[in-house]
Amino acid sequence: MNVSKIIDAPAHEVWDVIARFDRWPSWGPSVSRVRCDDALVREGARGAVRTPLGVWIDFEVTDVVDGVSWSWRVLGREATGHAVEPLGHSRSRLSFSLPSWAFPYALVCELALRRVAALVES
Image (cartoon, rainbow, N blue to C red):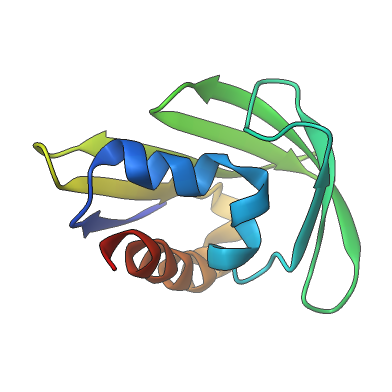
């Protein structure tokens, strides 16, 4: 399953928001803090995210195409994929892919898409 949104901002600006660990809490409804030794997503990066309930959950970034996409495993399970597609100079499409077991999480992803758009379109 995929959810996506066309955003009125260049792809590199959208990528900067979704690829920097310190920015995750600003757009991820299920992330209130991130602990990771890396600043940007990279294959093999490991850390933990704190949920709004205060629970820390381990993650590992599994695949990265710099400036284009990244995916991760959370608690050892395949989780969401994140992709940015340029649509000209000042527009892009941000997409999240979800494994079949996570389809209820699509509502959270829809909110995340709107938050990313608000961050880069302002």
